[in-house]
Amino acid sequence: MAERRRESASFVLGLLLALAGNLLVAQNAVAQDGSQAGAGEIFWYKDLNEAIAAAQQTNQPILVDFWADWCGPCKIMDAEVYTNPALVAAFREKMIGLRIHFDLQPEMVRKFEVPALPFLVFTNSYGTPLLEHRGLLEAEDMTTVIKAFPADLTEINRLDRRLQEDRNHFPALRDMGQRLREVGFYQASSGFYERALRHNDARRDPAQREPILYSMALNSLALQDGDAAASSLERCLKEFPQSVRKPDFLLSLGRAYILKEDRNRAKRSLDTLVKEFPRTPAAQAAQELLSTL
Image (cartoon, rainbow, N blue to C red; front, side, top):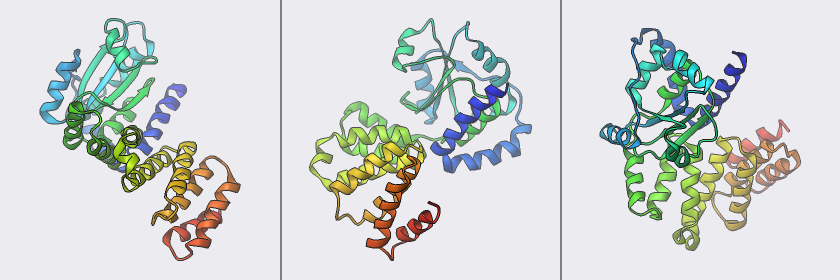
């Protein structure tokens, strides 16, 4: 049980990064109305197209649950998680459910690149993945995640439709990255930003490329990925040395180096910021960070 709680808690900790703003509200909601949720069952679709059709009617997200008869943790999820009244109530309000049998639907296993069971994929209304989790998730933690999840994905769905028509449509790639970042899907956001960066519009126009690259760096910081953040920020400083965002580049780079436990490079970045831009809010934040190094 302790191992289960540690694994489940680690997922929720990750979602504190991915759904930071929504999650705090959701935790309060679980405490307030969890005991009042009615009993019942979750309705599960068995076919992706049917689940997508249902989700598109209400612009709701889909939870795809991969399982198998031989999967022990899957049986625990069935007995202890998906029967929880608070979870059932939250699920009915926010989600469309889809269960996929690992052995009987191999094309779906390949489509979602399932590494092991249980495997959960949260998608938009078109089945485009937004978040993934490998392993058992406790009822309380899943309820918190579901309550934190945006209930209406209208704008994300609209952009997805545009990208289905033209997967290389630059404004849609850029705007999808921005929208996903706004709602806390940092990893998915960076995936669309990466595609946008490869587009000729971004390659030719520094004014388009700079905010995308910086947003990717901020996504990496939110996900506590110091290596990826530092790489993006070093590139920002190299490609846009005269940018008005340079103080923010240096501050964020210092934070990235701190995540990498590279104190010397963190101090150099923050010292440069304080020296070159002494009266900026970024410099004040840098001084506070320097006092901790």
